[in-house]
Amino acid sequence: QVQLVESGGGLVQAGGSLRLSCASSERTFRNYGMGWFRRAPGKEREFIAGIRWTDYATYYADSVKGRFTISGDNSKNTIDLQMNSLKPEDTAIYYCATYQAWMGTITMASSYNNWGQGTQVTVSS
Image: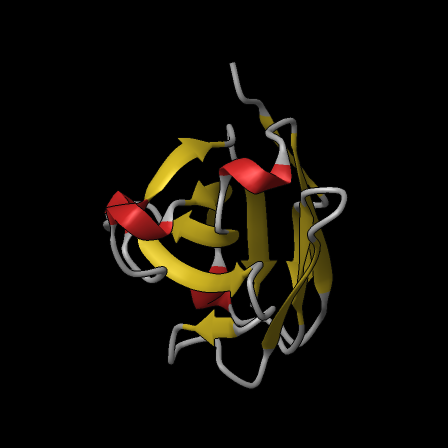
């Protein structure tokens, strides 16, 4: 069974930064990339960022573009999410997941087949 473990969440003031990390036990040749999603209280799960292993192309939601940066190491099957200029509306549980290209586009949650348990990010105003 594939396991994904997120770390790095916490409480930060608005304008601050956090760095999330995710490690997957899945062998890299078994997925096409990885991504980050979040779910805020009372809202649907939202795509945040994704990275594709074939060319290390990155994708971002408009809400975080310019503030968040996804990076990864294909050989280790790990990804990070550097979050800067955090806002209270970034408060959510953040999840990492493994992406399968044959399932759909990298921005769609339905294209991901393995998920972590999530890590809480709270941004105070």
